[in-house]
Amino acid sequence: MLLVARKNLFSEKTRLAISIGGVALSVFLIGILLSLFRGWSERVGSFVEDVPADLWVASEGTTDFTAAASILPGALGTRLELIPETDVVAPLIVRPMEMSHAGNDPDDTFDVHFVGYDPEIGLGGPLEVTAGKSPPGPGEIIVDEQMHRRHDVDIGDRLVRGTKSLTVVGYSRGGDFVYTQVAHVTIETAVDFLELDPPSQRTFFVMTLDDPEDRKVFARRLEVALPGVEFTTGEDFAAETRDRILGQILPILIVVLIVAFIVGLAVAGLTIYTATIEKSREYGILKAEGFTNPYLYRVVFEQSMITGIMGFLIGAGLTILIGPAAQGQVPQFVVFVRWQDILGIAGATLLMALIAAYIPVRRLTSIDPVSVFKG
Amino acid sequence: MTRYPSSKADPPEPGHERRTILRLAGVSKVYRSGDFEVTALDDVSFHVRGGEIVAVMGPSGSGKTTLLTIAGALLRPSVGRVHVCGIDVSEMSEGQLAGVRRNKVGFIYQSFNLLEALSALENVVLVAQNHGHDKQAAGERARDLLEMFGLGHRMHSLPKKMSDGEKQRVAIARALAKDPELLLADEPTANLDAKRGHEVMELLRQKAMELHKAVVVVSHDNRIRQFADRVVLLEDGRLRDDDTHSV
Ligand SMILES: Nc1ncnc2c1ncn2[C@@H]1O[C@H](COP(=O)(O)OP(=O)(O)OP(=O)(O)O)[C@@H](O)[C@H]1O
Ligand SMILES: [Mg+2]
Image 1 (cartoon, rainbow over the protein chains, first blue to last red):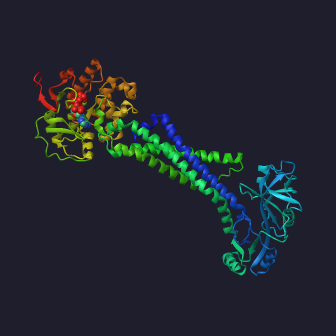
Image 2 (image 1 turned 30 degrees about the horizontal axis):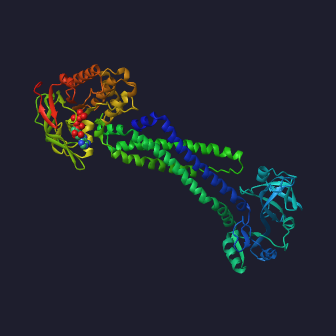
Image 3 (image 1 turned 180 degrees about the horizontal axis):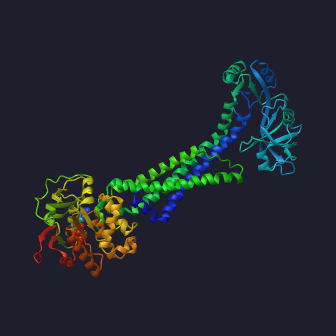
């Protein structure tokens, strides 16, 4: 490292702090946002991913779990069972809704992804019950433990929607979609609670096959045989669900990431630029003393690099420390810090430092060494 | 490092100190800015030998700095030839000129021009290293030079903590760090009081003599005369020998 670069940089402590701070802030913002995004994508897809179904069956137009606009006749389940390749078929009644605590203000609601399942089969039911009883009996509901944590829904509480209510009898794990959580009841309870008419209607069927390897081909065959019904493999259904939810935040995320990058770039660029302009005369002296332009470029470039590296280390450090700590405090703050992302941010910081050095470097060329002979 | 043709070197003369280090032949410099033309130097011919101190005297605007920067391979003449250590620098590229300045020419400026963030020692080391010394050799050389200029106790001081006289001594040490054959000083005492100015000039004269450097000191200050072997006068870009003091 060049003596001049280091000395110039560290002789102006305040400016150095500002420019490192700017880069660190930018890195931290990018890091936290990316980790949050990763955390959410892990979380929102995981329930569907973890249901061990080979195929999800829905009415045409529905390819994910969230919207649940699908309506299927109950008789379809029987038809599907009769297909020789079928192993198991389980019906699901799914309805996103808002519920409130009995006794609380009825306007004080929270989101619930309401799921009716068949406990005899189990498929599509709670992934893992961590407390209370399972399966739920008539008029009973098992809620995700995130709902218990976030909305103070305890075992024994009654959850209300309109004139109907259900008693919480257990907690399950793995059904958190960040903005909502699953809650499970039996099919019968669901029919009654939602007052379905006709009562035989279902939202989805989930199927397992004797030979899961064939599920893609099989899905296409069934779609031809059963017009108006959509067959989606488990992994596609999970991916669609994830994309549906994240697709809404992705554009915002990208904008904020770009803004964060520009903020870092602007702070680093401006401080390095002003530092270079302020030292114009000294660069002129160096030229007069026979230092070449490439040497001067290196001085500026190294200053920019040191700023970038230090800013990155602080920003990345903060991301790794604060992210998980914040998650402990705010449940929605689901972060997943991936080393690939940190590596990517390191690349972005490098780019930041390069661009920040570029403009002042061009100014260096125009400095006239003869000017240092003036007063 | 670039090698320069030495074919145009002066014929060998007995004794290192007698060699012509700087030679200007018919040098003119015209500054053009838009429609204006300023002839800063007009047909100047001039030479300096090793071990010789020449004072160039002249009023403000007479072209002293222009002469010095042309002699120091910073500026190319509009017309004429400039030889530094026998090398014709009149038509060199920027990069080649930088090479000449890096190895052959030491500048001493009116306003010292030390790098503010660097200590006295580092200022000198930097230039020694750029000349080609490795880190250790550069360090030793810088220490020796600073000791030589009575700055042993100031090695690690920053310029802003030093007096102007000390700063100019550091600057002279820096100029010598690349062991140049030519030393060029532009108004080296203008920012110093009379006593300090005298001290600095006396030191410069002594060391330059000891080391057989060719020295050009440019000034409008008459007190410079006493340190020079030879004085030339510059008026409106034209050079003439000084009648009152010559060798
Ligand atoms: N870059 C330039 N462009 C145009 N004219 C210039 C430039 N540099 C110097 N001059 C002009 O050339 C003439 C000689 O200038 P120079 O700086 O060499 O004089 P000087 O003897 O060093 O003066 P001073 O004692 O004030 O330092 C002056 O008229 C000056 O205005
Ligand atoms: Mg001048």
